[in-house]
Length: 403
Ligand SMILES: [Zn+2]
Image 1: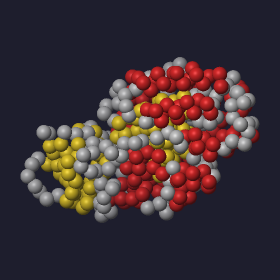
Image 2 (image 1 turned 30 degrees about the horizontal axis):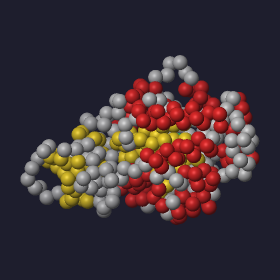
Image 3 (image 1 turned 45 degrees about the horizontal axis):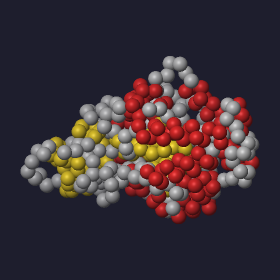
């Protein structure tokens, strides 16, 4: 047995109170003990003035855009216009998705992220270099017209079967997925007991398309020869989609920027089976209306954090996402905020039994953040600019990381 204890000024188990002068003992890639350091026998490493916490969990990302130096468009761009830039980006001849994915995984790891909920559009082979990060591959489907439902479903089913677990499905969004295709995917998720992630209630334009069948998304679909007049019944709402998604074993409602009060109540009533993924800096990029975080948390909805992609975010740093959120929503308790990037995000992905907090039996995915001058571990984690000095995957240090 390969055992080692890591001593730190602070250990932040997330599901237990912080431990001053604590340790995490690791054997064969798993945590075997967490507690107060007592100079016991056996090999140990003193990490010094750091906060040792579980590796962060980024619940929503599209790694294929990780090579972008800056987001597409401009602050306040409307979503349909931005989607056109994404389509153009995907057509660029010099694109190398495998290299982008590898760069995104490397960047995530350097930022203390050890698990991601990834929206995958290409084959699982591109993730071969995932280097030990937990990647939940949500295979994305896009097919708006009824005539495309069978072929798109067959393709996504094939890609899902080729992916290693843990994996799931992602019907992209109401403006790109026919309700019948969504139903097929939800039924499949139910049969296979897998999670589903869908962008929902993201923009005003989406609500308009659902309610009235017109607007910028209709124009875009016509331009792309994807429009199907009968696809969405007039008077539809995100609630209609939530009701379909509710029969999946686990659903990640991505964004939810414009969810109405009764829709938030509906999600809350689904309990742990449905989570909302908030991507604060992406929300800010589009200059959406104020995010209904207080209402969601007040209703008991599990809200977790994601970065979304570099097409709408300057980087994939989940800690910066967390800090941005705390600045924007100072009423959110710090413990709760940290849960949103760790154990709650793991639960949304269905992985809270194995990752997301420091507890015996869990995978030893860890991050160490410096805490010089901080007597409060949360302050150290939330301090601007503080970056992990070390990350571990299954107990294996991934090397001192550039500061
Ligand atoms: Zn997204």
